[in-house]
Length: 151
Image (tube, rainbow, N blue to C red; front, side, top):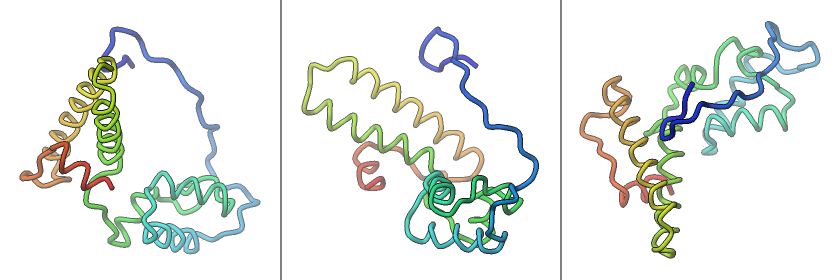
């Protein structure tokens, strides 16, 4: 896979070990894990943060192996839905922080270009989510509203 905004190739990363069943040392049942996911989501945690908390604090290494469903599937099953997808929120948060940096450092042209590239990724992702019906057609990305939505 190549990089989006450069002519270089992508770098390969580490892979998770191939596991087909939940480890025997995991004590929690599938229903307990699902309840934990719903509780942590109610506390305002993102899906990635839920996975980290389950791994580090509750000794559940993989939610899919423990329950047969992903965190996202569990949340949709329990009718818990965020207003924006998690990856779009993360990109918008980065754009807001880059904007505050550029406003303090107006000569930082590398960061300014990075913000422009990041905003193009956001627009591309918004177009995809509108096409798939995940966000409404009337929703538009604007930096000032992104600052309000991300906080």
